Image (cartoon, rainbow, N blue to C red):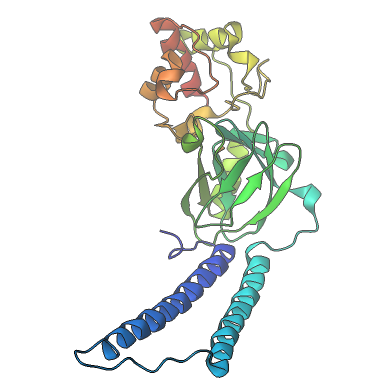
Length: 308
Ligand code: CUA
């Protein structure tokens, strides 16, 4: 749980600031509540005691309890400014973002423009390298948040925000949208897969491949259905006429571990459930119910499973 397991130098800076302030705040709390308790007991009313001496104003005391908090807050401000630049290093090549993530209601488009790779909801990165992200929105305000990896950053329609992402160790890092963006805000999950350089290169190469279009069997039938039903109005699959970007790019759909913004794991059974009635799985989402027949669903699933 963050802030105890930061995975990048940027999130380590935030975690350090958090722990430092938490420790200082805990000390202040102990000192203040301890003194109050001590005074309450030490000077409690005793039977037969006279009225205690009344005093008003104490310049020395008032100066002390004004100056100490000012100094403490100055230190906190200084540490915060230092953390801000460590957690969000400046970038001068804003035009050359290697990864573009676009928030949609309620999923994430992930594009690698230099590699001509388009995917969704799962970002792959090489370990130990600092990568510049451009963050966008296709509709409303979303917020890009990988808690153990980087600061939160809002995605605002019509403008690009930039963020360095750098993770030391290979692994899977979970994230989510952190700005309320409508009915399925809670199901706008994000997954960062950090790999060794060679494994990442291989992934990128695989993702850039244009999948063969099956022509026979269930998958062949599914490929045809995909073109003739309304799937192509919203989705793209490289190597076919499907080239719309309303919904997630499906070119290598079967290589992803989740679907529908993380609601379901990506298994054939779950894809079938999703196609049969998307609103039953994720109420309010923008995938229409195409009233598919059971055999159409079977064929479409067979086709989608070929998109490795
Ligand atoms: Cu997107 Cu909340």
